[in-house]
Amino acid sequence: MFKSTKVLPVMIMGAFVPGLRRKYPFHEYIFALLLVVCLILFTLADAETSPNFSIIGVIMISDALIMDMFLGNFQEAIFTMNPKTA
Image (tube, rainbow, N blue to C red; front, side, top):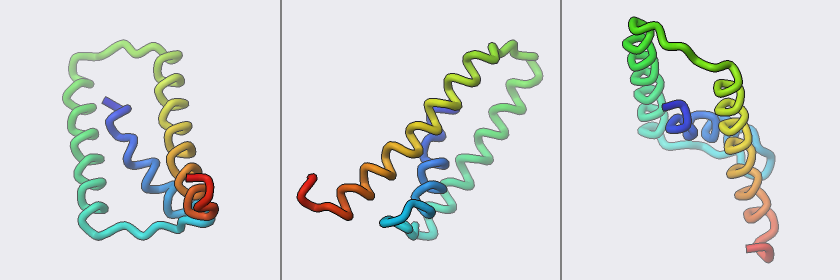
């Protein structure tokens, strides 16, 4: 479930990467907000069944999201700043 929210950290990081400083259309902010609300609702509904999460799994998926956040944005920044690399 959390892997599907990859778009949120990528959008946040895209606004701060030098060379990109991306501005997103208004509708993409709405979709991101909707994604956050749905994730909160899903987590709250799942909390009633008292799930048992492994801390190692949570750390691994969090690391994967962080790496995805950096990877896509830095690749795009490199290709934008150096068109010969594409």
